[in-house]
Image (cartoon, rainbow, N blue to C red; front, side, top):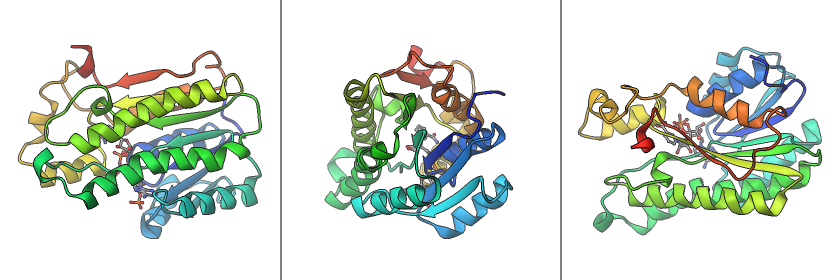
Length: 250
Ligand SMILES: NC(=O)c1ccc[n+]([C@@H]2O[C@H](COP(=O)([O-])OP(=O)(O)OC[C@H]3O[C@@H](n4cnc5c(N)ncnc54)[C@H](OP(=O)(O)O)[C@@H]3O)[C@@H](O)[C@H]2O)c1
């Protein structure tokens, strides 16, 4: 696949797992220089092993995007190594189920800090490094940011905020920087593995409402992310793109 990403500097929060890691794989194959951000060093080193790429082309940055300090340290590391950012993918995120009447302040804070604050402040610190006309940001929200889901009100609120943030940033930074958002349905990643292990439903039950008849694969989301990031895709900004096997078409 030629996305036109050769020699582009791509920063992926949550690049050590799931959708972010699949995006890294496609970007590396296209000749991009990729930085993976995550908290766990073990997962970071494992991701580097899976990608098995030239160490000059893929680097792991250990940082927690839920804090402004964490975002800043990640930006400093990218600036030192590459001096610029062409593409920022905000894929770091957590999913938690909790009924509305049981949500605690700590649970609210964790989800909002990673999913919303992390997305906003990583954009803020990376934007000064996005000096090239045609630089682009792709935020990862969810079908849960487009419509309600049962038993996860804070997650829904956090992803709705990412959708709104995307539109606001697209207006603020046009025409220099394009900002778009991908809204996956359920995707077979460690996030969903944990969800299934903690929930009282099966993979088959999870897949049942999807018109395509199954949940997604990380590569199917990564392909759309790389297509949005591609310089060939020069007229698209402020767009919210469902990639959900038809779930939200109903
Ligand atoms: N999988 C799905 O069904 C699905 C559906 C809709 C939307 N999404 C969204 O897609 C995105 C990626 O999900 P996924 O399924 O790929 O999840 P995943 O496999 O659990 O990966 C999450 C990634 O985010 C990183 N991360 C989490 N908190 C972080 C923090 N505070 N600072 C830096 N990195 C952090 C994780 O690394 P560390 O834990 O090491 O930090 C990991 O690399 C998320 O925003 C998720 O909400 C997923």
